[in-house]
Length: 115
Length: 114
Image (tube, rainbow over all chains, first blue to last red; front, side, top):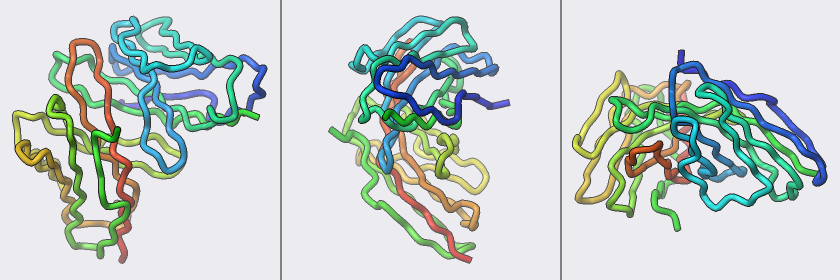
């Protein structure tokens, strides 16, 4: 099973709302990632969690707040977003480096629209 | 600054022929390379990877070649099938002890015609 699930599939929120994106995997991966993808652009890394600890934050604005409650779950809390934050948000997971394979497996994404 | 470059935005190939997708990188610290396939409104699907200690990796119809001295890699699909039509992303990363950050190229849109 190489499935990463993400909810919701679509989300429309106003600039004053607070919402959360959720990601789940049951592959035993201990590294999880959030990426942002704008139309006709490649995915851009936002955050990396390794063994439930934040290991990489690519200078993401504080209106995006990640959380890794356990080894299977990854959340992205959203607050006071701007219209330019509208994008496809992708979650991925992998084995941490030092193992034999570390391909990142992606979920289907959450299409976020900020109005 | 784009560290992974896919200079061909699109490629059209006839069914049964070989598709060759190219990728160049600038960061000599990259030591792990991957190819992903993406359909619209879906997440990228992992295809094949190669580490810098190898120059070739093969998986069924897909083969990735790595030329470290030229900082170039390519994906060969033989034979190409209409279902291969998608956007293909090249990605690269330096491996670290705690997860790793993929740098993606802008993608090449492959169209396989019957």
